[in-house]
Amino acid sequence: MKKLIAALIFLQGVLMSAVLKHIEINGVGIPVIFEKDSNLPIAGLQIVFQKSGSIEDGNLSGLAKMSAKMLAQGTKKLGNIGFAKKLEERAIRFGVVSGTETMVIEIGALRSEFDKGVKLLEELFKEPNLTPEALKNVKTQMLGFLARKKDDYDYIASKNLKKILFANTPLEHSSDGNVESIEKISLDDIKAFLRKHLVLKRAIVVAGGDISYEELEAKLKKLLSLLRVGESEKLPFYNASDAQKELVQKEQQIKQAYIYFGAPYYERVNNKDLYISKVAMFILGSGGFGSRLMEEIRVKRGLAYSAYSLARVNKSHSYFFGYLQTKLQSADEAKKLVKEVIEEFVKEGATKKELESAKKFLLGSEPLRNETLSQRLNRAFFEFYTGKPLGSSKEELKKIEALSLGELNNFIKNHQEITKLSFSIVTK
Image 1 (tube, rainbow, N blue to C red):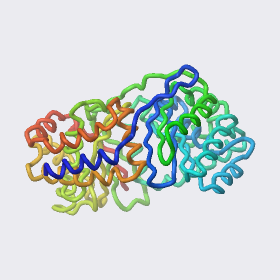
Image 2 (cartoon, rainbow, N blue to C red):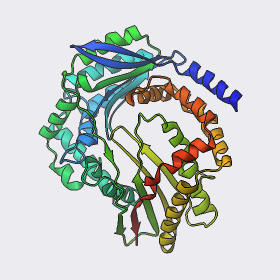
Image 3 (cartoon, rainbow, N blue to C red):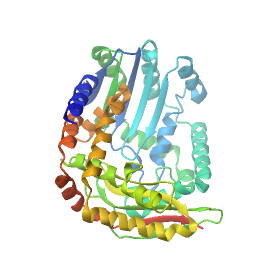
Image 4 (tube, one colour):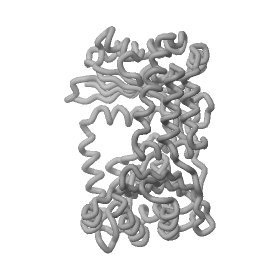
């Protein structure tokens, strides 16, 4: 095992060479995470805007996602179709995505077309297609999406679980919005959202490929100077509820019960023992066959095709959750068993065999998570975003390899909160 971990760390050191730099635009120091990689003649650029996702929707759920989709409508001069045609002609990948905490604008292209991609971004920043026609198009897309999700019971159960766990916080509302909120959002709302959030003080740049940093820096200075300075804001943090509530939604056409469960998880992104969480959660429910939940619910009792659980630890919130589907008549038994398995896990901890199996998988699969430039840049960004030095994941591997069963089980037993389960069930 020690030889394996040493080889993995060496390989990861060779593959991961992202560096952190800063570029000053209008008096604002903007972080730039960069990796040069000439293995393929491609280049990519992401501009990440912090505290600019759905957590900022306010009373208009879906506002961040709709604002992102409006930016994706191209420029006022070219329109949606004309802008898309320019991208397609040169095989430039372009996207604008809104998550819970961030909004990301991204381009990727062959190195020979990358300059054109950056110029199209410049045009977008100067004059986005914020027109009534574009708004109508985006609203049609989003309302169509919501209409299709009416019969997606996994989606419904997941959304209802968030309502329970994060009641009375911005996280209780779906980032997709609802019919009423989508119809209510105006062009002025979107303009105000973009004006507040697409600013230098919220920006982080992630870029790399077959391009030198000096070339990239020159392009960034021109591109980013088009943005306002703006203001940065601290991201709030929300713990999930420990109220152990249950929300059941009845549907006439349903043929299975969809069970989602969740609880608080008192971990933060900068906690020093977060690597232990990865091992613990793998053993409990995220490791597929062999995990506790899968073994007890599917293998031993045949109550579900799959059963899964994991912990989500973000800058703005942290929680434990899982899900399964089962026969309608088995829902109560499955729900009871979920509680029993988690309570037993917290009480007794993991076994030595489970720990060794988890180590082998997590360490052995590590190279697969660092194969591509985008994977390595995404990891470097996450390290920076969560306040860790670039390359800290290499140290995490060493810690996982050295983790003892006693340390693991002390960690597990200190997380009694995951037994305080709430349930969201969609059934007949």
